[in-house]
Amino acid sequence: MTDYGEEQRNELEALESIYPDSFTVLSENPPSFTITVTSEAGENDETVQTTLKFTYSEKYPDEAPLYEIFSQENLEDNDVSDILKLLALQAEENLGMVMIFTLVTAVQEKLNEIVDQIKTRREEEKKQKEKEAEEAEKKLFHGTPVTIENFLNWKAKFDAELLEIKKKRMKEEEQAGKNKLSGKQLFETDHNLDTSDIQFLEDAGNNVEVDESLFQEMDDLELEDDEDDPDYNPADPGSDSTD
Image (cartoon, rainbow, N blue to C red; front, side, top):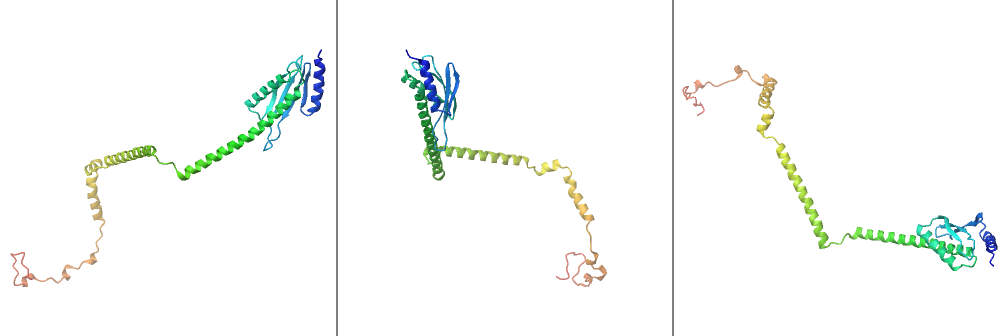
């Protein structure tokens, strides 16, 4: 008859010596404990980690232990799901034998794979970004190839914008014409226009200064006497002594 208690105690002692820094007993009845598993360091010293919780069933190892993800760091939801599936598979394959070390080792290898996948994923993302940048640069220098379809689309858009500009300009010119007043409208708008010019002339006349020194006295002028002219005819205003 199998002594399950003895096998479980012996395995617990072995696990404590194998994982001194990551093994923690949670309870003795039923035996429950955790083991923290950390991946190897990745390219940038990054790691992923999970703490596994195990609880012995009454007939372990002939029955699978209870297990769960107690905590985790840097793992995606799909990674956690994959680890649980891996534990289920390993537990089924190792029934009848103490298996905690085997389960932990399988999870360790899985975490290392995840770190490698992170590295691969980042390299692919880097290549994708470089490819997108290269394509963007090509478009910048080479532009979009002209086809009949995209040319007609551009032409239709250009004509529509041009027509809109013409309509706007015509509307502005029409509005400007409406706002321009005729002479009659100006007169009707400002009734002072008819008197303002007269007033301006009067004000200008009052302000004109005459320099009398520019004119000679009438007595100083030597005027020829038309009567001394033999051809002078007082009855003919048009007569001129010079004729």
